Length: 205
Image (cartoon, rainbow, N blue to C red):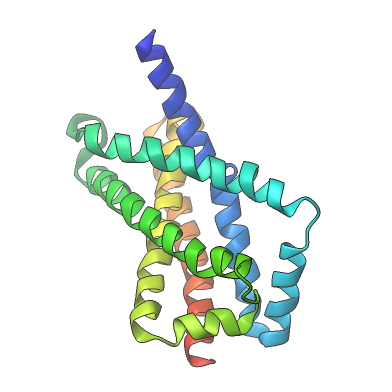
């Protein structure tokens, strides 16, 4: 019974990492990318998202609770996971390790990012371009955000590979190779969107 429960939790963990957490990550980075087109464009996009109907309920049930479950079970997996050389080989095992490391980094990053943005807005700060500009013009915070964004995007992209394999969408070696290239492309494109945005906030270019 306990094994069936753990199997269910791990499957749910995998699913939530893609839907809704992964989709939210992409949406969040795309909305932030409006900063590249100017302060007014970003403020409009941020205001639109902030003023969505039932936004608090959406944030709690679609973002925060799934992330909390994913994070708690993810930390547990980090401590009990074992390398599987026979099944995945050397390259995939490196990605296996990086998945765990980036999971911890991403958890710390998200906690800090939520404090610097959502909590500050709740305390009276404005959710606008100047808020992020003030954070990212600090060189230490800029590089912290670079590491955090890259970790989050890698964790999602590599987790997407694991999701497609474990859920039976990519079972053959050929299909897994195709999925590897596809998720690499996802990592590169989404990382570019995220890092380009950070550079705009920090340096205005």
